[in-house]
Length: 334
Image (cartoon, rainbow, N blue to C red; front, side, top):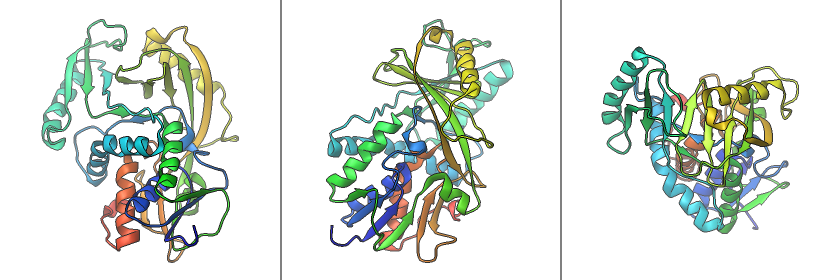
């Protein structure tokens, strides 16, 4: 590529989604990351594309909802261009309910979901039953939603990089930025603008539950990937010495997962992973004009919902960078 119209600094899911959206509109795109594709938190294991609860609606929840609805067509196009399986499945989610009060609250949310989710997904309270994959529930009921989806983060990020290349872009570990520059450099970039990095630890188990819904309880995500593995995560550590080391905190996560979901007892742990996720002060993504780099842009702060937000993030950043059209929610600005 002789000259780039847009350079994206960072080859995680946010940066590559911006590059993908710009390349899809005909821009010459260059992505530069000295650490390579999916080297940070986008190279993780879990991949829960889960919505916020359908109540107290705000611009962040609306943005995430639109992105989750976009996700299937987005990732299917990535698969077509890259010839890779990203592990996407809108398989829904089950959450146990601890008591009658939790059941009543969940049923109230089912009513608001009818309006807020526009008939495109449902949130319902159903009997837990006794199927092996259904989580034990003290109340006898679980929440079932059809908006939640799952993806294999590492494979999806690498496929997204291949899709950018298939559209004529470059993905490099070294080079000079040209044209409009978008900074998507993960937690170090988030610290630069006043955010923080939060370490997460996760594990991958050999257990075949392909096609089953994801599970959520005790702040744990249990993700049944389609390749015969189950991912479990994660911790949230604001203080850490080694950003990539796993330790007793992950052992605790595994113990809690088996306690909450006994079906996983005895499953072999085949990978332990740790990485640091970028979190802004508001917990919302930081998009738009870069606050400390005049003339540049920023797309960062995916934190725990980066993969769910990525399709929509790419589109609004392409609107701004290529067309000068600002469609970014006010609460996402730096």
